Amino acid sequence: MSRVVVVGAGAAGLCAARHLLVDASVAQVDILEQSSQLGGTWVYTESVGYDDFGLPIHTSMYKSLRTNLPKEIMGFPDFPIPESEKSYLPAKDMLAFLQLYADTHNVTQHIQFNQHVQLIKPKCGATQELWDVTYKDLTTGISQTKEYDYVFVCNGHYNTPFIPSIPGLKEFKGDIMHSHDYRVPEIFAGKRVLVVGAGPSGMDIALEITSVTTKVILSHHLREQPRTVFPENLVQKPDVARLEGNTVVFTDGSKDEVDVVFLCTGYLYNFPFLDASCGISVEDNCVEPLYKHLVNIYHPTMCFIGVPYYVCAFAMFDLQVRYYLRSMNGSFKLPNREAMIEHWEEEKRERAARGYTKRQAHMMGPDQDRYYASLSSEADTEKIPSVITKIREESSIRFLHNLQNYRQDVYKIIDDDTYEVISNGKREIIC
Ligand SMILES: Cc1cc2nc3c(=O)[nH]c(=O)nc-3n(C[C@H](O)[C@H](O)[C@H](O)COP(=O)(O)OP(=O)(O)OC[C@H]3O[C@@H](n4cnc5c(N)ncnc54)[C@H](O)[C@@H]3O)c2cc1C
Ligand SMILES: *[C@@H]1O[C@H](CO)[C@@H](O)[C@H](O)[C@H]1NC(C)=O
Ligand SMILES: *[C@@H]1O[C@H](CO)[C@@H](O)[C@H](O)[C@H]1NC(C)=O
Image (cartoon, rainbow, N blue to C red; front, side, top):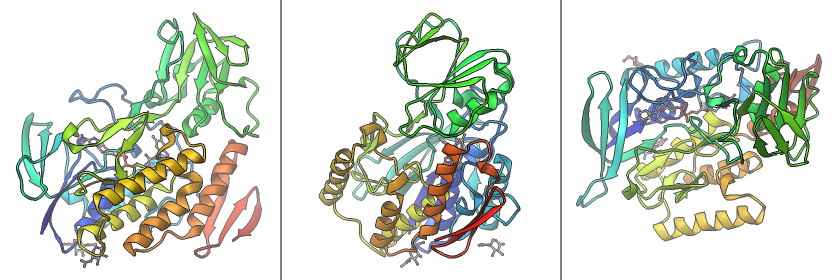
């Protein structure tokens, strides 16, 4: 009978707990959450910087956010998001959904809130592998260390800003801000803003702030030019070559004056609580060595839920958890260390051959189907139906080319391969 610790009560941690709590081979599940509520990313707060306990504010949620994927593909396979008129939901609906998921599965009552995990290390001298987990009760300030058989790392990875090295950034005289700290557009009123990066946040926020700014420059290196028609005060530029005082010099040689450099440059994986002896390194945003982006190869009793990105997040969390639980309870056996390392090395070689950089080690996108299939077939567990990835594909294209209106589209899943989409008054069935 095993004792399990789950770090974090965001969507990934809740999903892990939901399955662990009903597994006959699991005796104890401790869900440790540093904040006072569940939901992680989906919790909106006006605060930025540090919280009352001196910890960095975790959430990067901004006030106006609506999901960038339709709710029809954002639920858990065994717990879809309830029917409603719209497909693209505000963040507060997603938070309510996670609350419902946790309440329905009796997870909420098991969460230990205000518990900050400080240190995880393999226990010295133990004959079988055990973990020492040190965590601090933030309300009393008292730390304790407990022993576990398994560790589920579910701490999220949209919290530690990635700051690119742009020559002249340090000397820039205006404001520098990262999207992690963005909440409302008003802070940019009357300013000329350089938005660096055109990921989901960069595109959305650049558009949102055009209503209050005098000028927005969206600098990016998207391979495919967005066909979205932006308001007149937004111009697109290539990458920034350097900053000179308040002047931005772009890689095409053009120049512009700005008041604010707004970095929508993404986040870094960060596991500050993992002792070096856990064997996990993060370099250039590649977390390794992990088998199938999930299992700590040197210590297979530790897993990471949710590392891949450009995925159908909740469905993937659920699949990863089912996969890992089946390895825990003996439904299938993980390969030995050498085989897992070889698998990871081969995957790296194969990705490199297709032009992926090290930074993109955990990027899925078009690789999603294959990744999901490899998990479900190895563990002999329920697949993620292809209709889910098909809708994701369509939604991402619509995002790029019709940013202003794509969130009015309404999707309906018909069967495992087929869906219906109503877009601009037109109804289409796609299979
Ligand atoms: C602005 C924004 C918009 C997004 N929009 C979408 C979208 O539309 N669709 C989509 O599918 N995905 C979206 N995502 C991705 C989203 O992050 C995932 O869908 C998912 O919610 C991530 O869940 P998680 O549990 O992995 O991490 P999180 O939600 O970050 O949860 C991690 C939890 O761990 C806790 N924690 C961290 N460290 C510790 C510690 N040391 N001790 C104890 N607890 C700890 C945190 O407090 C937090 O509650 C968005 C992300 C961002 C930032
Ligand atoms: C949750 O707990 C209640 C009360 O103990 C029980 O009746 C119910 O079946 C549980 N639900 C699940 C999904 O386990
Ligand atoms: C192992 O765990 C999986 C996933 O929770 C479950 O479906 C399966 O029934 C379990 N098998 C055994 C042998 O306990």
